[in-house]
Amino acid sequence: MALTKAKSTVVASASNAAAATTRQTLTVEGKFGGFLTMKITNGGTGPTLQCEGRVLISHEDTLPSAASAGVDWKTVYRFGGGVLLNAITEMPFEWGPGVRHIEVEFHGNTGQAVTVEAIATTFEV
Image (cartoon, rainbow, N blue to C red):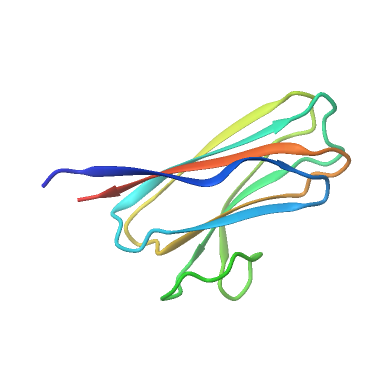
């Protein structure tokens, strides 16, 4: 059997306003695994507090609505974009066949907006 790969834009490049949250979900049920890249880009004036990128997973049978960590979503990975002006932070996350649903969330920056994005490749056999 051949391995097939499919690209999914989880969070299209967007401005995450100060004190805002940008989050999107992706169902990966029936996939063999995948690879996610996430990016935070600070502007010409860095944020007062850094933006955090987070990966959350859900074990639910159907894809839950996007939300903070709680009953449906559990945080499994996080990283920070720092506060330096024009800083670019890129981080990967890889998952296996045991994951049903993924959510990517960007949150925490204050003072200034930052640009965020997340792209995934899923694998099927």
